[in-house]
Length: 167
Image 1: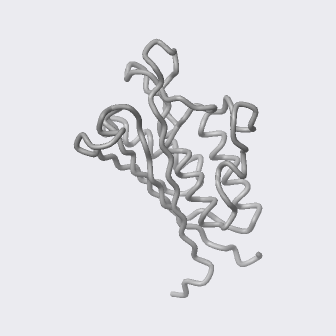
Image 2: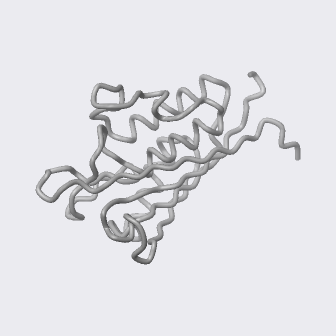
Image 3: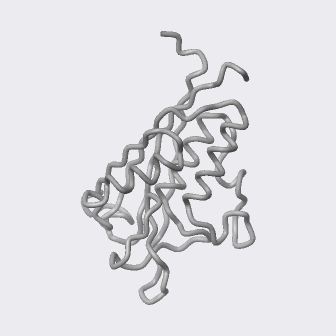
C-alpha cells in the first residue's frame, strides 16, 4: 500500500477551570457536562478535546492552527462559539484544501469529568463533526501539575488525513 498523500497531525489544548460561581458551563468532546462543576475560562466554550482535534486536523493538512483559522481573543471568530460548529468549519476548510479526514484520537487529561460513562456519546459527537472515526480516551496525572491538582483540563489529539487525488 502506498503512503503517498497520507499525513498525520497532532494538537494540544489546555484551559484552567473557571472560578466557582462563574456560571461557565462545562463543555468537553462536544458535549455539555451538567453537574460536573464549573466550565473552563476561555473566549469560546473552552472545549479542550475539540480544540486539540481542530489543531491536529489543521496540522495534518499543513493549514496552520486554530488561532490562524479563527483568530485569538474576545473579538475573534471563535469567541462565544461552541466547539462542534468550529470543528465542522475546520473540516470544511480541510476538505476545501484537498484533504479528507480518515481517523483521529483524543486523549483527555484531567480529574474531571469522568469520561467513561459518556465515552460513546463523546466519540459519536466528535466523529459526526469530524467526518471520520474519532476515539476518546482519558487519563489523570496522578496529582501532578495543574490537571492533577484539579485546576484545569487538557487534551492531546492526533489526526490522519488523506490528500485527495484531485488535488
